[in-house]
Amino acid sequence: MVQSLFLAHGAPTLALEENAYTRFLEELGRKMGKPDAVVIFTAHWISPVLSVTYRDDAYETIHDFGGFQEELYAMEYPAKGSTETASRLKNIFEQVGIPVKLDSSRGLDHGSWVVLRRMYPAADIPVVQVSVNPALPMKEQYFIGECIRQLREKDILLIGSGGTVHNLFSIEWGRRTPVSWAVEFDDWLVEKVLAKDLDALFHYDQYAPHARRAVPTPEHFIPLFIAMGSGGRETPELLHRSYDFGSLSHICFSF
Image (cartoon, rainbow, N blue to C red; front, side):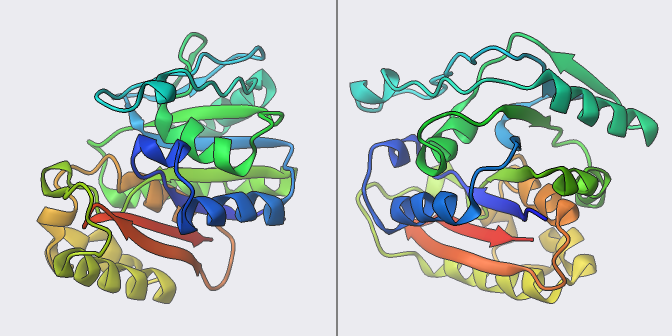
């Protein structure tokens, strides 16, 4: 049975760089093997109703960022979609009363294609992209993941793509060593995730050190809870941890 993953998608420059984290993602793709499809929840698609891409042809690559190197805007990740997998998702969510809609026009945003391009550069695996709704509490985000856990039995890789510490106002361009407050928040988070302390995690904003600074808005944190809910491992595993620009966290878990 395929694992569920939470992956930090970092800055768009991750698509260009060669470092420990990009090498980790490339090796992770090789270790995971080739699933029948990928379902990825991305922090860069926010909608009040859970939305699921619905297509079988190749996606447009969305360059949803500004001020970076020109070569980033020329990059493409022409993965195809899967209406079969999207329909499965829709049926699952409707059966449990979660509002859902299909979207036949949206392309892949950089929360999806940057990590997938590193893991599966051939773009030969069908991808279904799913939005997140920041208005829902974390317990409900976890439930969304629980609902689709069964897809892992169909050799479908479930990915939550976001970031644990993601505060663009705290970015220090060029700094490679992490700042203390980001490390302290992630120390708390890793401990609670590995212990499966869901009560603490659902109320992280009350218990975690520097929570408001680390998570000023929830959209990048939500995919962690969806990935946790969709996992089936008795003990989660911390796969990678590193930092860029002082506080931008590259943390990855397997569930």
